[in-house]
Every structure is written in C-alpha cells, then in structure tokens.
Picture (tube, helix red, strand yellow):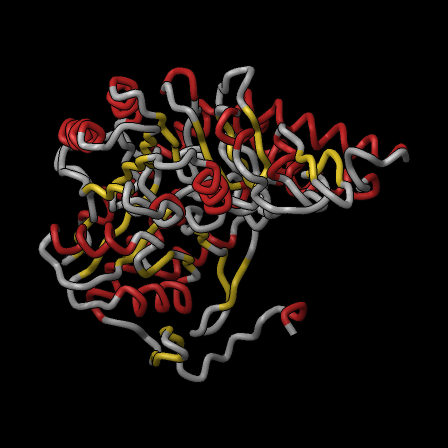
Amino acid sequence: MTLALDRTAANTEPVAPQGIPGVAGAALRVPLVTGGEIGYANLDHAASAPCLDAVRSAVDEFLPWYASVHRGAGFASQVSTRLYERTRDILRRFVDARATDTVVFTRNTTDSFNLLARSLPRRTSVVVFDTEHHAALLPWRGPNVRRVQLPRTRLAAVSVVDEALAACPEGPRLVVVTGASNVTGELLPVAEIAAVARKHGARVALDAAQLAPHRRISLRELDVDYVALSGHKLYAPFGAGALIGRSDWLRAAEPYLAGGGATKLVTPEAVVWNTGAERHEAGSPNTVGVYALGVACERLAANWAAVGEHEATLLERLRKGLAGVPGCAELRLFDAPVDRVGTVSFVVDGFEPGWLAAVLSAEYGIGVRDGAFCAHVATKRLIGECGRDGQQAVRVSLGLGSTEEHVDRLVLALRQIVARGARWEYTKVDGRWAPVGDPRELPPFCA
C-alpha cells in the first residue's frame, strides 16, 4: 500500500456503517503540508468527540425557541423549560439511575467532581487510584485523602481498595474510580470495587467520561452512588455535563455557586436556598448544551449494539497494526488482557511523541493526541513499565467518526515514518512541534 492509495480512499465520501449515528465533519478535508488535501482522520475522540448529526439538527430546530427557563411566562420559555427538565429524565435512563437520584447539570466531568468534593460531609475519607485522570484525581483535598497505586491485576486493585478503606478513620467514606482509562482504554473492575466499598460502608463515585460514549452504564447493576460525565465526550460539544447520584450529600451541602436560580427566598437578613438540583445550578443555565446532551444520550442508547461492534472491529485492527510497527510499545494498566474501549496509547523508540503527532497531522491528515493526557502519574509510570524512557506518549482514540481507512492510514504512516522519517522539516514553536514555513492556510472564519 502507498500513500497514493490512501489519498484515493480518502477521496471517497465516507459512509457510516449501518446503525452508527453520523457525525459532523465526517466528510471534512484538510490540507497537507506537502500539497493537496485529504479526508481528515479524526483519531482523537477521547479528547473531544465530534458533534452527532442528530444533535446538530436538533439544536438548529430548537434555537428559535431558545428562551429563559423555569420562571418565564412566555411560550418559548415553557418550551425551553420542558426540554431542560426532560433531559434530567433522559440522563437517569441513560445511566440506569435510581428514581430518587439527583441530576445536576454541570459543565463537564471536572466540574461535576469539584461539585461533589464541595458536597462531602466533614471528615469524609476519600480513596482514589493515583492513575486517575486529573478530573477525578485532583478535586479531593485534606488529610483523609488516600491516593493508592494501581496494581497490575484487577484482583489486586480490588484488594488495594479494601485495604485502604479498612485503614480509614471512622466517618463517611468515598471511593473514586474511573470506568475506562483515558490513557489505555482498559476498563477497571468497578462492580467488584463497589462490592468492597459496601463492606466498609463507603460510597462510590464513577468517572464515566471515557466510558459513557462507548458502553451502556447501569448505576444499579454496578451499585455505585454517583456518576460524572461530559457532553463533549458524548458527541454533544456544547458545554454541558452532569453529576448524577444520591441526593442527601448534595442537598445538605452549601450551594456550589451563589446566585439566582439556587435561591428560594432572599431577604435583607437571610437567604433560603433551594434543596433540589437547582441548589447547585445558579445562574442562567446552558439550556442548549443540556438539550444537546440529552439528544446525544438518546441516540447512543438506541444504537449500543452497532456502536460496540463498530468499535471492537476497529480496535482489533488498530492494535494488530500497531504491533507490527517497529519499536512501537503499547501502554497497558494490567498485565492480562481486559475489556476495553477504543483508546490506545503508545511510544515508538527514537521518536518524540509530539514530533510524531505533528508529522501525522501535517503529512497524513491524521489527528491524534500527544502528551500525558491529563493523567501525568499514569502515563509516566506506564511508559517506564513498558521499558521506555519519557513522560509523554501518543494516544489514538476511536469513535463514531472512525473508519477502517483511518486506522490503516495511521499504521501505514507510522511504518513509513519509522522507515524513512518525515518529508518536511519541523521545529518547536511555543513548545509544540510544527512544520517549518507551513504553507497551509486556516479557514476564513479563523481570521
């Protein structure tokens, strides 16, 4: 196969497999530094997923009706309020939450966990793996936070949580665990960890940022208490996320933000705060973003079987291809194979990850992620455990916009780069690799 064949394949209009929701940008073409253009291979879904076509259409239909929510007397306000509140029920169904669970709309997973951290009862002990994404690692503060090292087996991971909880002082306890690693895509033993947590009277908060776009989630089956997710990972990139879970800690906590919407009554002497989800949703809400999130969740929930099959096929093709790239080492949390979503991180001997990502973009039209993926501890450790030096890697993340041609183009590109290097000269600009004298022009709306 040659790059010329890749260009030919990319010139055809991409067709989504049956049952796979279409995404905006599927037919996007990008310029190459070497001349010409090519269909964009978006292999960076884990950072931000493209917008579903269905979400874009729904938002366009809703925008003329957009108005204030909750206290507006106008008909458009009633429409906006109906859609905003209906989305709470959609999200409850999407994660199979309990009827009594609260759905608080936030900006993203980071915002959700900061809200939960602010809502913990005094002297709550928190147990969290040090390999977590920063959104789940950093919000917890104080002497009762125990960051434990993730072992190389799932069984040992459960035991580590058991031991950490046993060592916690008396009082409320919370275990924070990711559903799918944003570095490797591997699934953690959430249900088993929840069972151990119950033994110690602890609650469990699930970071579903990377799991929710790929797999069905059931709070009840996993027996977890809270789940946090982000719309921009769920093909609804309009700035909304959610924290879903038990209401008592949220109801008792001080409002996350002080302002209108969070208040029931304000007098010159005192403030009476709302007790429901509105308690933590001060200010004018992101009604459009919330509606978009609900539409995306409904569309994904209706197509899980096709989505899972599509991703599994591409993931197998990707990992097999990377295994044939000389000097390529895949990062893994666990020694034994485990279930995983379509995310793979790797290093290639002799090639800086940032440089590799720049070449893949400029010369092959491929978008990947490089760096430590907001999981610095995990990335550095896993690079060392696979016998390499460094603190950064390349991450490929698959999604609804990914195709076999994208995967094949990436593998071929890596083989060509390893064999003969880049065809263009690169230098660092503001700490990032970039083509020297890049002739490509940004689209007019960037001016």
